[in-house]
Every structure is written in structure tokens, then in C-alpha cells.
Image (cartoon, rainbow, N blue to C red; front, top):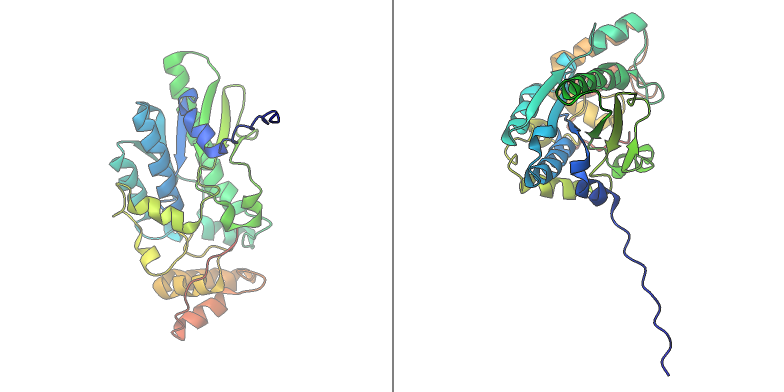
Length: 283
């Protein structure tokens, strides 16, 4: 007699696929866009699925404008990318001074441990956009608690901290009595090559920022405090005037751009004509 068959466990569903399959359960979807490669792939993935489900009207693309410290043309590019999918585009900005002016006032640069640049210039303004979106939804549908999905392009490959982040989790800080905000990282398990493959097959393949063509691994601030030295030297070579403005702030505050690397060293390397291949960075 043959032995009894062993029941097979059902295959575990990919967490990102699970969220995408339940996309219609969210009242609003905010696509956080830097205009860079991960935002582009996330935009194509989520917007295509929403379009298939006939719910594109729930989507908004939000870009936190950083002014002079972000790469030229980024805001316009992020807008153009959103428009290719027929989506509403919102630009948000921090109240008050920009990054360099804040550094001058504080006398300190942000750091890996104290990333006030992210909270002040990106997260805060985007939370205010969520408030605006939720208020408009409640004005149409009554005093309901709105389910909002906040889509971000963070990937596990980028840092140990990002690798530990769940694909989807309720953001208690952003949630309140009027809204429940779920942070969603649809590309969390993707490798860089997968991101570029998705972009090449998308309708925004021609809307890639030229900084990537110059070798930059990311489209963050032109001089991100987490960037590799090679990427910072390349950025200084491509943006000499802004590099010298950063150097001026470093000299006036007496605080090094980074403990292990000064802006003076970066500018000097760029002035020597160093052309290193920009390496990715963690963070």
C-alpha cells in the first residue's frame, strides 16, 4: 500500500504582489518621486496596475523640490514622467530656508545619524501633501478615515537599514484619526539591473536624467552626505559653482561636510581633474 500523500503548503505570496493585488482597497495612492530611477520603476509598476484596474484617478505623484541643491531639471523631469501616465503632479517645498541656508544657521551639516535634511525638506512637505489629499477626499466622500498608500522606491540592496524595512507597514507617525497611511516599497527586493530593465520597457524610457549618463548611481541631492567620495567628486566636476558654494558654507561654519571627508577635499579632487567611476553608496 502506498503511503498517504503529504499535503503541500501553498506557496508564500510575494508581499509586494499582495499589496498590488489589493490596490483597489486604498482610497488614495501617493507616488513619492525623486525623478530618479527607482521612482521611475515604481511609477511604472504601480501606475500600470492602477490603469489596468481603472483607478488612476486615485493616484498623485508628489515631488519634494529641493531648489539649488538638487540636480538641474529634476523637477521638470518628474513632472513629465507623471504626465506620461496622465497623473496629477504636485510639487511640495519646505517652508523657510533651503538646505545650505539651514546648514549656515545650524552651523552643522546633516549626517547619517542625524538626517534632518530628509525630515525637514522631504518628509515634512510630503506629509502636508497627504493632508491636502485626504482633506479633498473627505470633502467629496464625507468624514471617513481615508486609507492612503505611500509608494517609495527604497530597495534592500541600498543599505542594511533599508534591507530591514518591511515591504508594507502602517506609518504610525503619518497616520491619525483622519487617515491610515501605509508605506509601500514595491521594489524592495529588486536589484539595480531589474530597475533599469523595467525602465527600458516603460513609456518613460526616454525621460532618464542625464546625471545617470554621467555615471551617477543615484539622483539624490547633488552632494548627498551619504554619497561615496567618487560620486561626490564627479558631482563637483559636473557642478563646480555649487561645489564652491558648499565649500564656502563649510569654511564659514567651520564644520566639515562629513567627518571623514571635507568639501575642500572633494573640490580639490575635482579641480585636479580626477574622473573616478562613481561608486554606489549605502543609506
